[in-house]
Length: 350
Image (cartoon, rainbow, N blue to C red):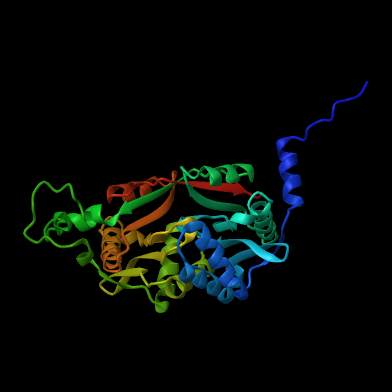
């Protein structure tokens, strides 16, 4: 009796396809810039050269924080993938890799190029001891959702939150933020105050809010240690360096009260991550010293951030918050953020 040939299970088929790609992968090089920009422009309908120049330059400056691969078919660049190492954004304990871009030229699609690029990223992430891969995608992008499902991703348990600045209450209703009474201590940003205050002021006026500077490192490390309970100087150093050098514009801020740093926000403004074609600001880290909690520091930082973004004609801001971080979720939802049309995904590597 002839036995029927057994069809391989989905995991085995996936593994086979990943291990026998149709493309040759290698690290992305500066000489690839023009080809990368051309492939992306063909797919997006517009050029994003400035974005790719910044990401490639960042990888050259901090190679330990970036994984970037090219895929070749018949000796020609057919696709590219960009990843950024996550060391501790919003208190994350495990290091991971943020998949920012994975693109395949139209003429090379359906030949395993995307699988090959992802396999190269995953292998490099494992070699570096990274615990997970993270990314985000619009829920309507069915092709990307199918790719992420096939390569082992699942919903991450985090929410992508966003706010259109034209609708954000910190900009549309700044007069509703009341000053604290000299006789009654309280939060100067308590919008539930039953009546107006003769000493009304903007939230940003409750603290001295300025651009974050390299000299602020020790203060940021101190606040981060209080918030997370861990000494994460290396992460803070890298994040501060990126905030000051790698972003297209400097928008990270520090807030001081009586000369003492009370909080900070690290944000970046980029055109390109996760296939975005319009400018967006991304808040990576927000920290407030415990002794200044409920004193309006977070509101002051974000109000000034939003004013700066408005001046730069950036119309939307987003962030990612774990659903377990109830305090942080409550804060962002309370200042006009809402769930985005993007979904957050994760693939565990350990």
